[in-house]
Image (cartoon, rainbow, N blue to C red; front, side, top):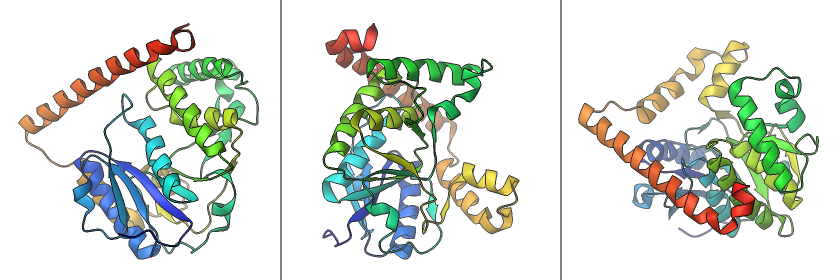
Length: 293
């Protein structure tokens, strides 16, 4: 497939059959609603996408302990090919036509569908009434910030909800952002926070001087299961209108398997976890003071 003339692409991470199947559904949505837009996918099996003309699939081997921080590699690949990339979770869907050139895509830096400043994100902790998970996340994020000479309570630092956000090149700041994210990914995972990429994105952007802004991202009508549940609860959506999307996602993400298959998958998952954790501990020893003191 030849690269199209658009200045932006969509990108995602899709490893494992469940997420490859979900990403293929999303690829068909993008092909339908945003024609001539490339969809960059980092995956463990690129051949699964060989018949989908809008997909640029690249082989990827898991680097993070639990995959979450590997999203940075999809963004890096997207930016190596385009001026802007829109990261979208593989389990999401596009529901309506996407504008040819959204205004927000041309603004340098990060444009996120969901973000909030750190004091608001950790308001409960700062008020002295946190839950256990939030407190742990805050403590790790605060210490990581201090190692980068940043103040977590600074309202200019934003937590980025990573399911849908765009990154547009900004005179090389985006490269430094990805380098800082790599550093923070290791730090978070060493401290047991495997799904804390929202903190890492915000802190890395602040360190790199890459702007972060909230936007409704007009023109992208999407389905994301946990977001849709909130919309339904608020009366902003009706279950009967989106039931098909819930059904399709559940069928692909949680397929029925024989007990032997489930045991094998569970065992492989544990082995990969232990291997990647050991690998992380060995790699980070080269900067012992930063990661362990």
